[in-house]
Length: 305
Image 1 (cartoon, helix red, strand yellow):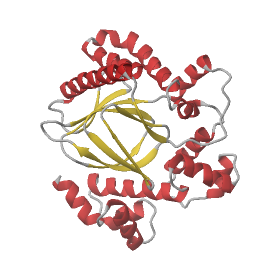
Image 2 (spheres, helix red, strand yellow):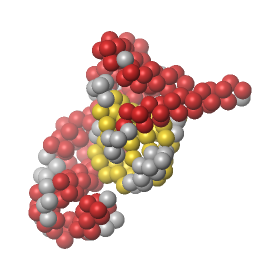
Image 3 (cartoon, one colour):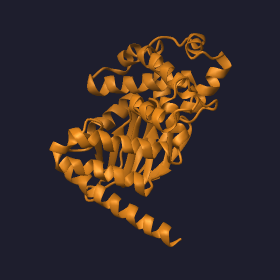
C-alpha cells in the first residue's frame, strides 16, 4: 500500500511538470493541437468546455490537466489526469472537454503511433507472437504507470535541448512503445502491428471506406478484402470500431459535411450532395441526430464560438 501511494504521488508530480511544460509550449498559441520540433509529438490545449467532433488517427494521448468525455458509436469514455487514451485505428469520435477554464486550461500530450515502429519492437521482444483471433476495441483508456510517464516526461524535456532531438527522441519513442506493449493493454497494442490480425485487416478496410466514403457501401466487397465472410466481417468491424460499416461511413460523411459548411461556406444542401447524400432532408435528420441541432444552427454556433 505504501509503495502504491509513493507511485501515485510520483505520477501526480510528473503530470504536474508535464502540465507546466505543455502550458509553456502552448501559451499564446490559442486552442487546439500544437506541433512541436519532435515530429510525432503534439500538445493539446483548450481553455473552455468544448465539443469535439473529429476523425482520430492512431495515437497515444495523456491528459495532464482537465477532463474529457468521448463518444465512440454508442459507447462513452471518461478520462482525466494521469490517464491515457490509445487509438489504434482511424475512428470518427465525438466528445466534450468537460473541465477547462482560461486560468486552468485543458492540457494534453499526444504522440502519433507508427505501426511500422511498433512492428519492429514486437519482432524483437515477442518474435513468436501470432495474430490473435479475438478483435480488440480500436480505442481504450487506461491509467498511466510510472515507467510510461517517465518516458513521456523525458521526451518533452528534449524540447528544451533541440540539438538532442534527432538522436535521443527516436530512442525514447521506442521506449514508450515498449512500455505500452508490456503494459495492461499490450495485447491490443500488438494487434496494431501484427500482420493478419483482425485489427489490421479492419484497419485496411477503414482506409478504403475513408477514400470512397461518398460512394454507396458494398459490404460484400469490403468483407472480401478483409478475407472474411460478411457476417464475420460485420462482427469484427463492430468489435474494433463500436459501429457497423454503414454507421462508420455515415459519421465520416457528416463530419466532412460539417467541415465543408464551416471552412468552405457551403450551404447544407450542397454539402449533403458533396458527401454522398441523395436526400437533403435525410441529411438534416442524421446531422441533427449526431450533432444535437440542425446544420444551420450548428454552424452558426461554431462561428460565434
